[in-house]
Length: 446
Image (cartoon, rainbow, N blue to C red; front, side, top):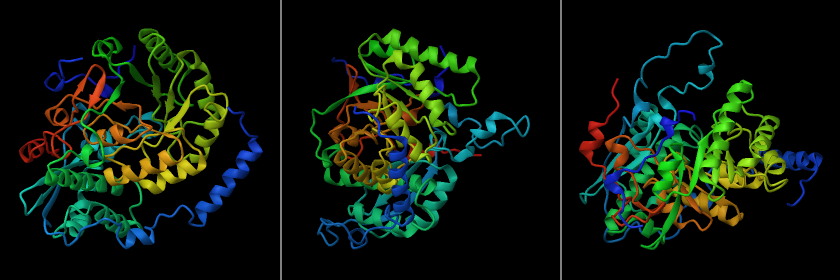
């Protein structure tokens, strides 16, 4: 059994409830089709700029409504989330030019350990909290750019503010750290909108009080998860083309052992978090894992290899033998990035992270794209209070991923659950337990 402590999800006792193909087309056809999409992308068909409708303001806004409130301050802070934050700001020590850690060192800006919390205060006494990532670089974007587009505006006009912020940065910030900074302020705006209405964000999206969605547990102990009623599990598979055979076999054996521990029922998935996987390598791994009957295999390739992902759908997914489903999108951003994945057929399961992809506004638009294409939406960390409004309301979403625990600030963002299901939150806004004091106490300092 491998050590997956960094990805372990354990139930926080304080929040737990007591109750219970088609055949593949030829490679020539595929490459011809891909070339057409590449030409479309080069010509601007996959527009990064905001549409005319967006620039003019989306319908349904009430800028002059009598209950208008205004934003008076915008702040954001990198936060210490758990053990992964330890030493994050320290300079690395490498053994030499060929040290394999160089390929995976993300500095203090990589998503999971670089979490930030935005706090937006209004003249009505409402404070909205939002989560993003990108560390101090994302905070600089908020302090130097985004807050100037927010202070003095009505935070209830969330769609219009999102379009203005995205449009203003489109020439430098279409993806990556900018989108993660945008996620923090956008989720804070939605938190304000829910608190102002006295309703949960889930309810604002049309959700019902009795909505629930099955948990899938990433990492951790399967027996402990089953004792909580959890039926679906995902194992980390951190291998690639340059892994040794011994290392590869060890991780493959872990996945097969997970299936044995689960039994035949329930969905089992894997996540490679790949930076340099190749199509041929991924096909080989998928074939070796066929006895595990995987529901999906996640991030087998670099996020940039959108054409390779489309090949995988035809070589291992539903476009071909149907061994498993191909999943990606955790490291993709905004509706524009996901539009490329959908149009190319690069995935069968799309996985936006609400705190990275551009926030809830972006996630809603991504969900519309995915649903219209007849694909599945299963957000990354969809069981967090940030992800749950989408996980509970997207028709194709059948599971929600567990959210890390291990610190007071993470526990404050945990969703209620019972008998292996996440439940709809009832508190106004996202329903987190975050406070200004907690955020300031958890600031990540040099």
